[in-house]
Image (cartoon, rainbow, N blue to C red; front, side):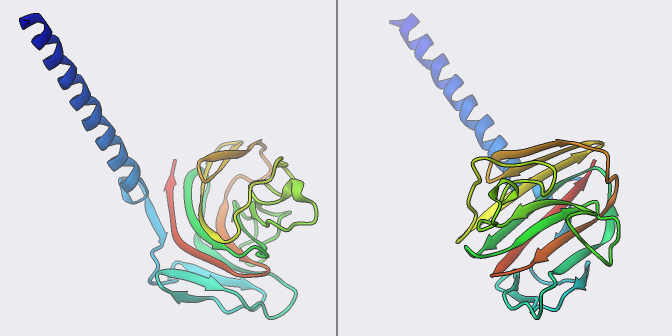
Length: 207
């Protein structure tokens, strides 16, 4: 009986240890984007760290998010970070309508004129006519098949840029991996091209 009790007690210790480790891991994940090395680019309260570039739209702050849903013309509008970044981890939470045309632009070469030819773009575009470069893909560089849908819900992009390597993860699913040295450094851009787009948490960790 004593042997059985000892084994039972040991098992309880192991279970408790696993639970504690799991809790620690969850806590680290939960605070990761505001922990050591992370910089909050958008905190839901101010757009002081961003420039408005491109076409006219109604960027505004609502309920801890920046929202745009009325584009005043054919040209897309952008919020562009005032700082440039080379190697980084990027965390972006967004809500897109089903008909939204948006994207996360990175390493942009001209901070005053953003295009998918002068930046890397992690797309947010469920209704793109050519879905191979739709939501989850890197436009002109990495196709995505099948294309995940982001419309009508909050989603998270986690993007890693390190040297020539760029990895895009959407809602925990790796959707695009690129090895390319065309763009080495530049600001981050948040796009509004159609529909409704909301961004509520944007953080970056230089590598």
